[in-house]
Image (cartoon, rainbow, N blue to C red; front, side, top):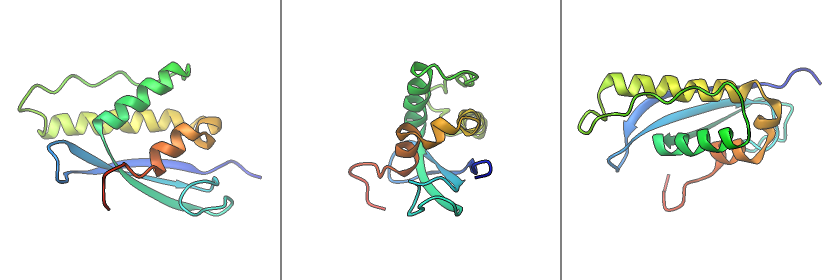
Length: 126
């Protein structure tokens, strides 16, 4: 088999029924376990994730000894949470985490990342 495909992008910040901004995460991959893909053919998986989700992911990756993770963006001051600069910095932070993940086939195939992308948050109806 050739190199695996696993590309992620983050965009479309929006507020959906809650006070926190969520971001659309899109992953294109030919690994099994994403969407209904059995692997081998590219599938696109999408989810909306909040800053807190990425925060948990970042911590889990750090605990797992993953190298090259980005530094946290500056804390958003209260009332500043939704300004464009904060959102832009966060999207770059999320994108940088996913770039590190994309370089590591083991991570891309592992439960941590698959759950992050594919898990349906409890209590949400989409």
